[in-house]
Image: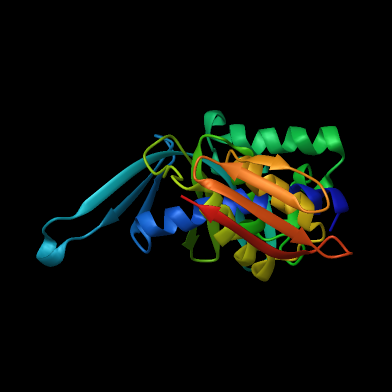
Length: 230
């Protein structure tokens, strides 16, 4: 696991986690169908007795896939056998270019060991780096899973209270993932939510719904987030 890949993950995981929370609320365990020729993911839910069903269609980008048998992640641009149309590879290619520019081998090698970087964490980087997306989706199939980035407005949920969201995501972020630099993760989340960040011994993040103070210990770890929201 390279330090640069970990730093990139920490910078974007907070916003990605926020988006996944909203996406799960929207589609939960709905049925999914991927149409490669159209470049779309369709999520559907049957109504009671077959009535009142719901369907949402979202354009998508193919990021890559996990193989259960090989225990690896394969980038979409490396999966030449599947014949993925070039327009669906833009997000993965952008990450590949970032890896080439910054010397991040996990983004440029054809495959990655899942013990080092699984599809969820790779997709979180893609989600956090892309401004016009609703998050990512893992579509399981026999022997593995497909990961796509959901683009377009169909599933995007605006965050009405970004300071409140910041305060609720931080504990979940620190509890659920290995974060080596708490300041980097907090800054990435705040900026991703469109908040103003004032850095010092303690930090202040502010937005249209109020402000919050972030306290750190001597090792730079977050000890408390408190604030007032309207």
